[in-house]
Image (cartoon, rainbow, N blue to C red; front, top):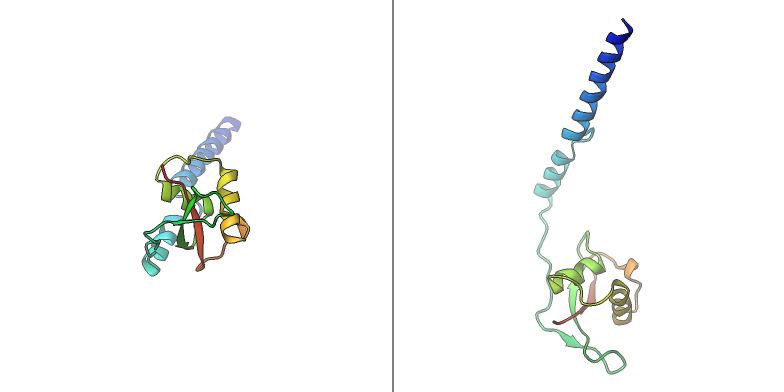
Length: 121
């Protein structure tokens, strides 16, 4: 009798793990599909021209202006503009961003336009 309870307990445990991994306790796929259809995301608008910085900064550094959308980070925007591996360290990206905008990289606001460092090849 004891073995039968252990056997059924293991079966129930395995089924609950399978169900949680397969479908999840929260049906996030259904929630996300509702949000996507309700609010389609617009393409990011960025200026075509790059602009050189003033003489006080590194003269070879240029930037693009991008309007911040939900989910954007400074690092993701720079990676999108480079379209590959970053040619500088993450600390340098953050430092360049903060120098261009006089705002901390963690304090960017949705809907505002910021100067994002553009690292040309």
